[in-house]
Length: 150
Image 1 (tube, one colour):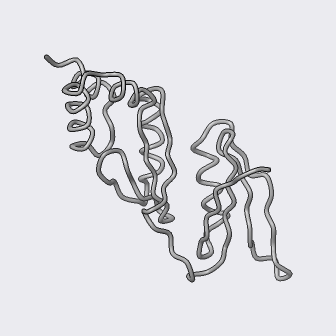
Image 2: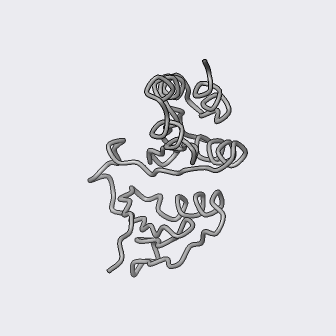
């Protein structure tokens, strides 16, 4: 068995897959399917080890922020690069969330966030979460500083 993220789009499947695979290391477009007229219907691609399928199904099912793609970044540089690429033509949201130019919602967060929150005293975790919720693009060092504040 294999699971994948399926994105229903209105004519932007190929552009979405090209944009995402350009931003993420170790990513590629694996397959492009076309209808008899040559129009792209489905694009299968990978972002790292995550398989996604983008489908040009029309306007019937619009994307919603109720489902988002979640990325944990190890460095500020990596986080900033993805943030810049994904907000280009999109819009920033609170606490590390954004909606890209295709209408897909993303959570771009530091890989050490769980450690800063779960493995901390309650008051340190609260400081980290308060700092996180006050940000748009996440500043990893600011979260660490909030955690270590006395």
